[in-house]
Length: 130
Image 1 (tube, helix red, strand yellow):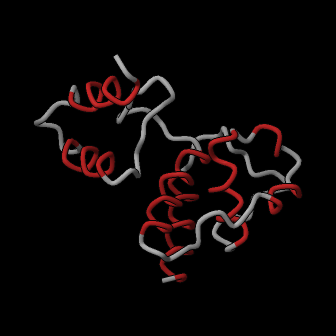
Image 2 (image 1 turned 180 degrees about the vertical axis):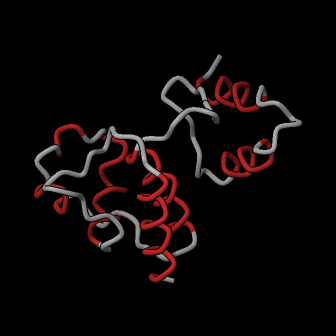
């Protein structure tokens, strides 16, 4: 079974009566949510800061609010840059370049879970960008 069809099966297994089913399926169809490398999608799992950034980056570039591929050189200033996954570097770099992410104490903490406070600040910055 190909990775794309396996991923489709995983997405189809999301409970149809869940409050998030339609949103997940729409995000998948738009290429915003692609799931993990193995094609799994865990809607009730906590989200890391880098994964949250990737989802938002895809939305912001799809709607032309941000330009794609603005580089990763902005990440060089963070002490924990080596912890950033390859798949999220472009998203994080673009978010930093556009002052949507700023880090804290010289770190960007890509593997930390996003808090509600951090999410609220990020959404406010995105709103201001619009």
